[in-house]
Image (cartoon, rainbow, N blue to C red; front, side):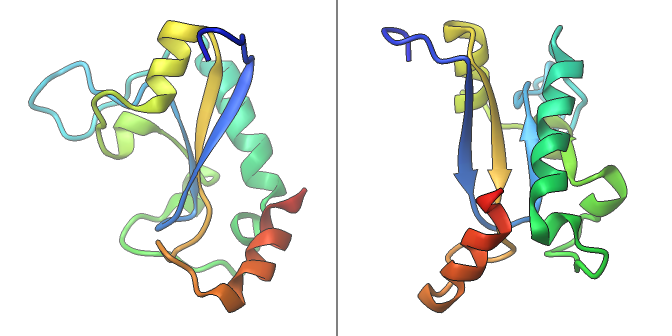
Length: 127
């Protein structure tokens, strides 16, 4: 990424239905959750919202909570550190060291969906 200048990127995870954006590291060392907006917070929120509203599972009015957090009430987006702090995340590295705007997309409630579920996951995220 430092050699080839990307502008946008997304990394894909499983285990929740939400789109997160930088910063992922809290500013206060002992805080597990803390809002840590970047100077480009509006752009990151827009990118996350565009993905979340195009994702069929996230946009569904019948969507269920995956675990404890109700991300639907937040538009299925959240500042990374405001959910849980991650030191040295790819989102933060990309933004701080390569000028690339990167978001994390949590694609599914299941960390490891069964192979039979992959066509549905493709449809949920194809757009």
